[in-house]
Image (tube, rainbow, N blue to C red; front, side, top):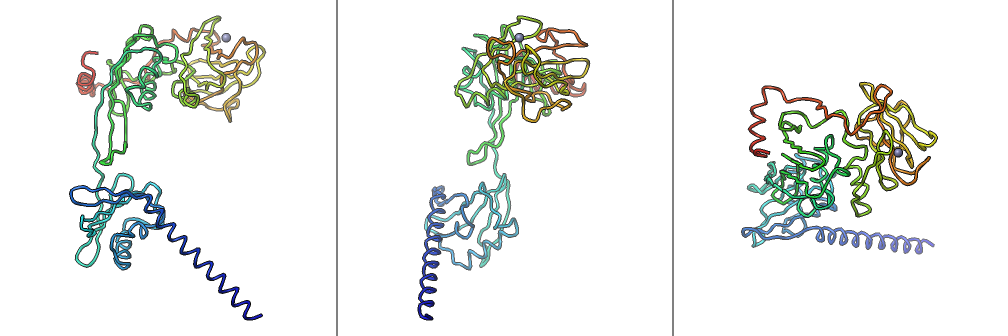
Length: 388
Ligand SMILES: [Zn+2]
């Protein structure tokens, strides 16, 4: 009996030992798979992201256990090594003859270095080198804004471009062939080519229907040539370009939407499920079925304005009467509910109880550039857009 028990224990112990060995081999190979070796200026640089700990990442560089321990200890000054993040990146730098020089961990935009000094190791921190590049892209519309820009402009910048003008141009219905655009944007990259920031400095759109629009970024806001903010009380359309683009990228095509005006409102033809946004901030005053309008939402804004959204397929999650919505928030999704011949959004606007033509509403800037900045802004404008 006793002997059998000992035998069982020995087998169990043996199995655990084998499992531990296998696990450590696995962990080691995982680390190797994650790391990459490059040779620069007679230095060998091994880089990777952490799968396990720093100790494992330092395996294979001819460091003794004691040295590895000292390196880890030097790091504990900077951060908790037990809480390494998946996007932390390490580099181990050696001479081509295999002598360890230093190890570096990049977290966010800082490099944390530990290098050998006499018989110990010391740490230091330095900011990551960021380089900036300014790119100008000009073009002519061939079909939709997206299709015309996507060969040369990054997708995110197209959406930013549409955002800059979202109070003055509806890029889903007001884009026409041969319209012209300019976009000047800045890309900031780390020395490893990782993009850390991308922003539009200036943009223009000149359309046969949309008219001429220009914008220059100044102190975190965009202004037109007159120094008026691009922002206005109302978005140019209830089908918001950015929202719609994220909806359609899953379907891999960009629709060219149309609107008609069969009544005092506007009907936007759009596929079922297209997100519908409130054109201004306000409060929901109605949500429910309303006869021929089907699923219907109305939002009350300041200065006596009310907007309504009809024939919806469904409402935005969490929407209820009395809820505050921000400009651009989704209120529902395009459908064909009520008396409707096909999927479309019936959008209407009233002021003090009377229907008004939303498309004729004048763009009213929410703010103007302070007088003291006028000169500085004019110079910046000219340097970016010249006489546009
Ligand atoms: Zn309608």
